[in-house]
Length: 147
Image (tube, rainbow, N blue to C red; front, side):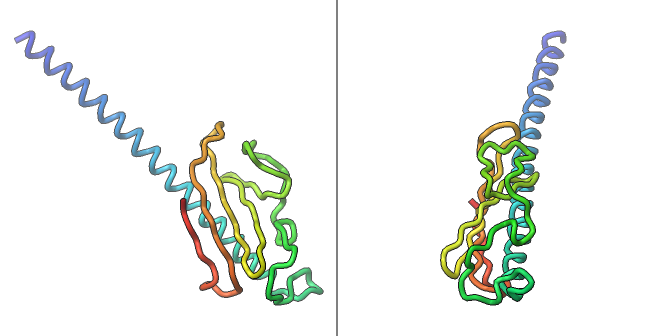
């Protein structure tokens, strides 16, 4: 009877240990997905602000409906750059940064590309990369890719 109880105790400890490991792994995957969703939300908000800038008259600091994006940057659409508040490993002076990650803006003719990158806490390990391409001023002109 003693050996049987010891075997059941060891089996119970192994099962509990496996459940803890599976729970930690599930939590990590959920945190990564939540971060990707937050990056997409931020990038779509920025792309909407870019579209609003493009439609705004020049007298009000906008792009006046030009066919290309000109020299718009994050500061012109209301996003402060160069603060590196969250100690992101690669934050440059022309990138916007928030709690979810860093955002880079690249302009090429009629396309504006927003690349959002998030890092694992306290490391330089990339968690998510989101790319949003804005090609016009309607909701259909926004394309999102999650890497």
